[in-house]
Every structure is written in C-alpha cells, then in structure tokens.
Image 1 (tube, rainbow, N blue to C red):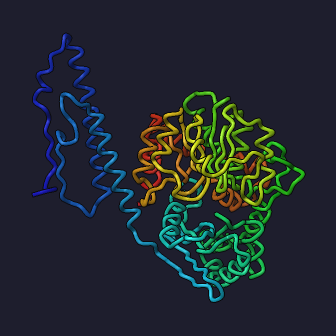
Image 2 (image 1 turned 135 degrees about the vertical axis):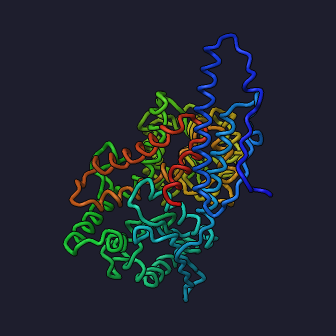
Length: 490
C-alpha cells in the first residue's frame, strides 16, 4: 500500500567500505550517523507539517542515499518537499474574509481579501490598476501575512485592490466611494495604506480622514493592541507624524528643499539596504557593482537612488514607456535627477529609449544587481537567464510577487531564479513601510529620520542573518526564507 510505512534501507556496501586507515573509517561512520540523525529530524519535521497524512513511505534509495550519491542530496530533497508542503497548505487555505464591491457610478470594481485575523487584525495596502482581479488581491494578502512574520506586528495579511485605470480622471471619485464602502472594516480590524497607483499621503490619508478615520491603521491599533483610549490616541498620533514626516536629513532625501516624506522613500530604501546586507553577509564589496532597475515609481526610484548613494553603478532603468542605458553607469547626480524629475511615477529623461528598444537591450547590458520594482508577475525566466549570462549575482524584490508565475510564492520562474543567484524575496526586501507602521505602533518612540530608517534596515538585516545562519549558500535563499517564515504561520 502506498504511503503505508517508513522504510529505511541502508546500503550494504556501506559496511564494506575500503579505507586505508581505520581512523578514516571511524570518521566516516561518525559523519554518516550524524547526517542520518539530521535526516530523521527532517522527516519528523515533515510529518508535523502534514499531520493530515498519517501514512508515509520513504525509501532512502529513492531520494539518493546510494554509494554514488551524497546524503546531502537526500536532505535537500526532503527540504524541498517540506517547503512544497508548507506552501501548499498556506496557499490553499481559504481567506477568512473576502469583501467585494461594485462602483455604482463607473465600471470600477474592488475587493478586500483578509487572509486571516491573526492577532485580531489584518493589514495591507490599497492598490489600483486596470485588469486587476480577486486572485491578484488574494495573492498579495497572503504575501502580506508572510511579510508581517518578518516586519511585525504579528497580524494577518490583507490587501485592497480596485480594478480601474488610475489615469482616468474619475479616479478620485472612485477612491472616495470605495473608502465610504469599506469604512466599517477599517474602523474595526483592518489597517491599510498606499500601494500601486494609490498614494498614501495625497490620497489614502486625506480621503479617510474626511470620513472620520484618525489614521488608516486605526483598525489594527484597535483590534490588535487593545489599547486604552489614551494609549490609542498616542499611537495614532505617532502614526500621523511618522508616516507623513518630511525628511530633513540630507542623507535620506534626494532634496531636503522638497516635501519628500518617509512614505515616499522607505520601501525603496529597504530594497537597497537588502542588497547591502547581502554583500556584507558574504564579506564582499558593494562598491562599483552594477544594477538594473525595473520600474521607476516610488520603490524603484528610491532603491536606485540609495544604491547609487552606496557606490553602485546604475547601468539601466526600464519603465512602462521606455528607459535608459549607460553601460559605464550613471553618476549619482544623474540618478538623483532621474528621481527628482519624474512625471508622476514615471521616468522622464533625455534620450529615452523606446519600450521596444529598452526591452530588447537592457537584459544584455550586464549587471550584478537586479531590482524588479514594477507591477506584479512581470519577470520571465528568459529575462533572468539573460541577466545571469551577463553577470547577475543578486535580485532584490521591490515588487510584490515579481515573477511571472501563477503560483503565489515559489513558482517555476521564482525557483529558477533562486537556483541561479541570490533572490531576496519581497516579504523581506520590501517590508519597509510595514516595518515603519510597526515601529510607530510602539509606545513613545523617537520620531526622527535616522531612527525610522535605521529600524527598517535593522529589521531587514536581522531577517537575512536569521535565514543565512541556517542556509549560508548564495542560491536557494528564497526557499530557505520561505521555510523559515511560513513555518511560523502554519
């Protein structure tokens, strides 16, 4: 019967090993048995990860315990199976709450997906794009739950999504009617913010304030922290000050003469810091590494700015309507100008290459660093292969779910990239805004540029160090990070 028992078969040839020294033989046996114990622990972990399956068959020959293969292959196979099972259980679990909305005035439609009310609350931003559907919102809600396992607070993941063209002049009215409809949820147990094509400072906060919400995160403060009225007022005040805070420290702002806020820069800052932490973990120099940025909105532009500030050469930027390439690297001043001279959330530069030309050339121009920071599910396997063939070392995910897979987490494109280079996943690299919310929800924190930005950098570093301590190889980083993070949720 399939899956009826655990069968351990040890190769008889093991006891007939021919070695020149009895001491070498003893050493080999010690190593073998230590690895065998490790394997047993992995099997137990896998059984715990799938308690609904009480019938198992496991043949060590089947996964590679053979004189011509190493025990490491067996362990790696088990680890992959364990990760696959964790992801399956997490992805297949139905969201606890799905709210659906149809705008009575326009063709707009929208959803809130709350994956769970872990800790009594859930959080996730509000996005808008033409063609968005409920599946995309559900994927992002699950991603947010994993992200909160890194950034805190320990709450459920959620996401709001509106299927509507953000360039349509009726956008403001759509958002206003949307927030009227979802206000009871926001006041009760859900905290939101800005996301793709929806601005935190200029849209979410002012619209919800007019409707009586003291801050878009008020629902989380109420439902998760169970704070007294006095403490609740204090936390909300910190959120109001910190998120909208205009950056005064020239180290963090491209131009302190402009009203550039923490919310504008913090996610891209974290994406860039993740790259820096990666090279420090491996004792390598970041200086003069080359980078390609996909998307020049708030996340991509900020990441490019901070990477250039660190000494990285930005050699290419691809945006929705075109891009620029300089194989020698744009100067810091040029990158800063690219940031400051954007038109809305789009790159505006002299000698802008057409989208067709940039998409043909950029993957071959050569870079060690790639930052996907545009919409979800845009990066294809052939593009990763071209980047790898031209020197790619690390991917820092600024976009949520950047790879063009139907799976939420570890589809074939994500797995391919993870097998070739270091891929720092979105739930670590772009957790900056979520971490700021968590920081400002602490009681009586210091609200300064340095304190907020350092906290985000430290949070990302701690997560990467934790994953690295259990998985020191450069490839497979996303797989190890997923096993660590989802393991805390299922």
